[in-house]
Amino acid sequence: MALLTIQKDAQRIGEIVVVGPSISLQKRLITHLCHEVILTNNNTVFGRSRITHELQLFFYGIGEKEQYQDFAWDIVGRKMLGYMIVFNWYDSQAFQETQLLVDQLTQRTNAHGIIVGDVADSFLSIHSGVFEHGFSLSSKLSFVLWNSAEKKNAKNSMRIMLDTVINHFD
Image (cartoon, rainbow, N blue to C red; front, top):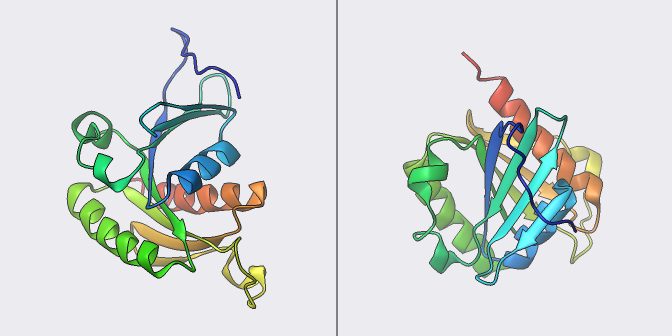
């Protein structure tokens, strides 16, 4: 992992907030999506994925649920491209926390989002082709299952969220 540096001529095109009950899953998702990642001492994860020299996506993993309210929503929230909620699909406590988080985010922001359920810890008897395109919960919120052991799956989740954003351009 490289140190995150922002050059003066670089354009920050999209900012994406990553939240969920597990900082380790946030870090894994951001690591799979970004070329550069920083984990701060307060469990916040920052990442950058450079698409081209002018097109970059910045990811902000907020950390544990106690930090959600302290996060700079007034700064990042107004300009974020979208958000990703990541959780362990097989953990009932994480599922309940995710439901509360979905309610909070849909009230707090008008941005597009995706809920990402990690299925890496257990065998999923459904063939991945069935769920790899996700499904929409609303016009601005989608859901997809993710195998956090595979980098390709993280990129697929990001594509679904970006497709949702692109399909709603005015």
